[in-house]
Each structure stands twice: as structure tokens, then as C-alpha cells.
Length: 454
Image 1 (cartoon, helix red, strand yellow):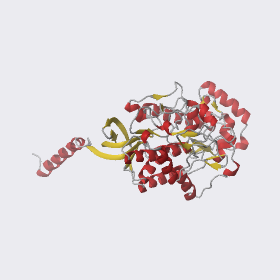
Image 2 (image 1 turned 180 degrees about the vertical axis):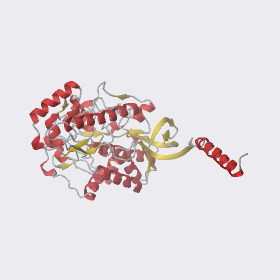
Image 3 (image 1 turned 180 degrees about the horizontal axis):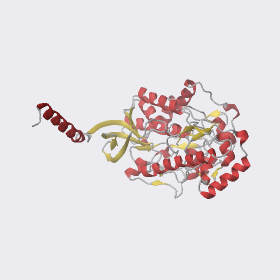
Image 4 (image 1 turned 90 degrees about the vertical axis):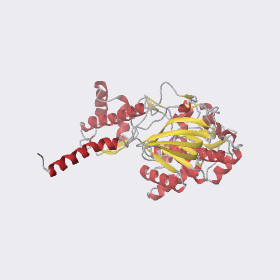
């Protein structure tokens, strides 16, 4: 017969073995109810600015981001040289995005470029270099100071229209939330919210490649026989040890940049979790191929990774069908729309399997973005900001970069807040009031009579 102490010990073991079942029964989260004036889905380049602007105007603002930090392309994807804020030596985009960029530069002890000699053919010289993680922290701080409720690791699972706006179901780690919001802003980059609602989107059968940003160092360029290395790279491509797109700029481009922005991941797509997973895996596999190839070559024995981003940067997926659409002809002509709410300035920058050859704008041309390109056609209480605006593919290749996306985000934040105040839908908000409020918050707003930059 077991002793009392032994029986007590066995009983305690039984209690412990039952514990996981008890805990498991408590892991289903209860549904939390929230309300907001403005709900923004996507905390990337545009969404962050949208949220800060709405919060500063006093709107009850919720920003939902499926990742771990704000900033998107600038931070998580590592394109930490946002631009362009200047055109032909004059600033054309300012406001909250510029505020965050310059704060990041100042706090990190960096310097702004010299904009006084700007030309379209050397646009990279006038992109502002920032510390991505610091930018993310400052953006987060600005959101918190503006009263924005930040919700990381969450994403929408259902959206329905209600009498005074939208009911959005969110899911996250151990979390289920239902938000009733008066205005909804899609800043996902993929027009994912617009698609969930059932409104039309457009995309091409073949989309631009993505890029996983990295930088390698530790090699001795003096020992490198470039011609021999190019021949070995061609042979490696034939055998499958390398893909041709692994070095978009070729061996010489790689040596000059340490691999930075030198890779293309064909068909990189972030519109579903499965496709985004595939893009990230293929990006990292390309880095491994590159490292293994070069480390076997003379002069590369001490090659090492100096920088490697967590995600493959995505250039193109879905765009909305909007109340207005920006075409290539409109963009390169610098059309000033009657409802223009911000400028944009960047070369046509379409990437494909052969690389990229930017097409600069002609001297003095500064395109504008119309308000109607941020309004999904036929929608109510809904806007977009960022690369999924209504535009054709070639115009979008220039509009998708950070500075105009920040400007769009600020315009969306102003409009959504004014729509809440006036109990109306964004398309019915006074354009004069939108422009006036943007200017009050530091944005540069095109004049309806403008023609290029004066």
C-alpha cells in the first residue's frame, strides 16, 4: 500500500497533467468591442502619416499593422532613402512625412543632401538617407503623442458597411476585435481592404519584381579579376548555382554596391500570406546563392553580411479603380488636376527581368496627384493612400515611392477627419477646406492655376 506522501505526490502529478487541458480551454479570446472615428489598415509609409494627421486633428484614431513596426518600405523593407521631396532644387513635398524624416536625420547626427544642384538624371543623390529603425521609433512616438491607438500583429478578417460607417473584424495573437469606425482608410499597399469590401481592383498579369535589401562586405576588390569573375558568374547561371536575376546589376554592379539593391525576386507579391511567404523565402535563398558563389572566389574569402532585411520589398500588386486615374501621359506632362492635393516627383521606374532604366521627367515638370485617385469608385466613407492609388502601371512606377505616399497619407488623414466632423463621405468634403487644413499642418499643396514649379 502506497504511503500517504506517495499518494499525495501522485495526486499532484495528476493535477499537473490536467493543467494543459484547463489552460487550453481558456485560450479562445473573447470579442473586444472598439469604436473609432478613423480606422487605418496598414502602418507603412502612407498609413503612418494618415494616422498621425488624423490624431493631431482630434479624431479617435486606430492604426492596425500586421507587422511589428511602422514605416513599411522605409523600415521593414530597408529602402531607407525616401524621396523625392524636392524637384528642380525646390521642395514640393513637406508636412508630417518630411518632419519625421528630418527628425530622424537630426537625431542620428546625419546630414541632408544638397538640393541646390538637383537634376532629374541623378535622383538618387537627392534621396534622404535615414536610419530605418530610428525612423520607426520616431513615427511610433508621433502616433502616441497624437493619441493614436496602435495595434500591431493584427489584420482584418471581415468588413461590413453599417449605418454610420464600417464594422471591421480584426484578428491577432490571442485577440479578436470588432471595430465600428466612421471612416476607413486602406493603406495596405495592396488595396486589400477595398478587395475585401468587393470593390474593383486592377493589376497586371506580370508584376514588377521585388528586392530583398542586403549589403555584403569584407572582400578585397584589388584581388578581383572582374572579367574572370563575370565568366564564372555566367557559368554558375548555366548550372543553376545562380539565377540571372540574383545580380540585377551584374558583377560590376555588385562590386560597386556590395549587393545593395542589386537583386530581383521575380513576381514578388504580398497580396496574400502565401505569396508574401514565397517572396521572402525566394529573396533569402537568392542571398544564400550569392554568398556561396562569391566566397568560393579569390578575394572573397572574408566576405560577410553587413546588412540583411527581414522582408523582400514589394513594388507592385493591386491598385484601385478610382474616381480619377493618373495615366502615364498625365504624369510625364506634369498635369495639374483641378482637385490636386499634393505633388509627386520621381522618374518612371519600371523594373522587369532585364533590370531597370529610369526615365527622368523633363526639366521643370512636377506631376500632381488628384483627390479622386484616392477614392474608390462608387464608395462611401472609404479612402486609400499609398501605392494602391488609382493609376496606370507606368505612372504607378513613379507614384509608389515614399515621399508622394507620405503626402497622400496626410491628405487622407485630413479628409477622413473632416468627413467625420461633417458627417459625410470623403468625396463630399470641401476641397478648399482640405487644402487649407493641409497647409496649416505644413503640407505643400498645388495651386489649381499652377503649371510646373514657379
